[in-house]
Length: 170
Image (cartoon, rainbow, N blue to C red):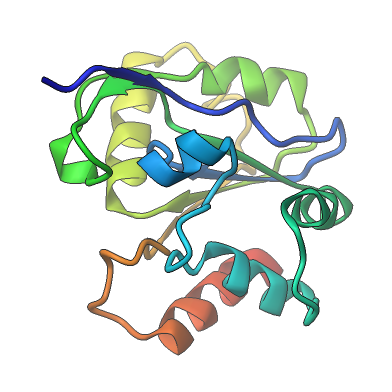
C-alpha cells in the first residue's frame, strides 16, 4: 500500500526571477532531501551547462548556483500518494500554493514546467484558481519543457539541453 508523500521545501531567494516546477520528487530525492537526486536525472547536468558551470558540484553548491542565477525550484504538488517514483502512478495530488509563491516573489517573470505531469497539474491549478495572480501578471511566461527524468528517454540529452537553454536564456 502506497503512503502519502510530501514535497521538499522550495529553493528560493527573494529576488528569484524564474521558477522551475517539477511534479513531485522521486523516492531517491525524498530520501536524500535533495531535488533531482536520482543519478540518472539530467536536471543538474542541464542547468550547470546552461549556466556555464563545468565543475562537479555538491548539493549545497548546486543550490548556491541556482540562487546566484535567480532560479527558484519547487514542485507542483505539496503531497500525493504514489508507489515508487513514476509520475503516472500519482493519485490524490494536492497542489502547492503557487499563487502565494508568486505574490511573495514579485520578480518571478517565467515559470518553467519540468515535464508533462508538472504541466498538467499547473493547468489544473490555474483552472481552479481563476482569481489568482496569473491573470494579473500579464507578462508571466509559462514554458512547458521536456522532463529531465531518466524515464523520458524519447529525446536525447542534447535535445533536452537545447530546449531548456532556449527557455531559460530567452
